[in-house]
Image 1 (cartoon, rainbow, N blue to C red):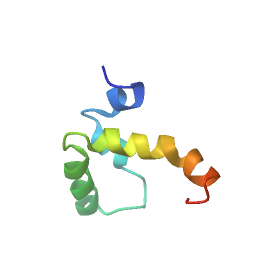
Image 2 (tube, rainbow, N blue to C red; image 1 turned 45 degrees about the vertical axis):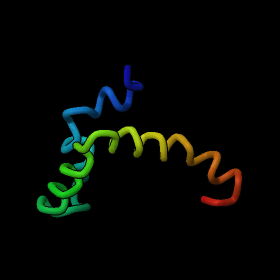
Image 3 (cartoon, helix red, strand yellow; image 1 turned 90 degrees about the vertical axis):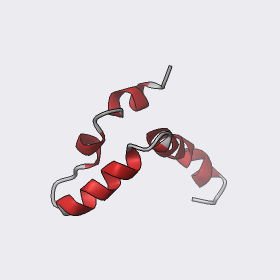
Amino acid sequence: MPDIPEALIAGREETWLTQPDMLFPEEIAVYVRAYQQPGAVRGSCMDHRAAPQDVAQGSG
């Protein structure tokens, strides 16, 4: 069973990645295709979860 963020994002990558005035639609489409690949959202979430440890170790 996926973790909650992964479960909520799956199938909704475009909504998750669309930020007003940040990217052009063509750019969003590239990110959406990338994040629809197996494991991509999970990897992103795991990277986000590791950020506090990265900062504590001085590598972030």
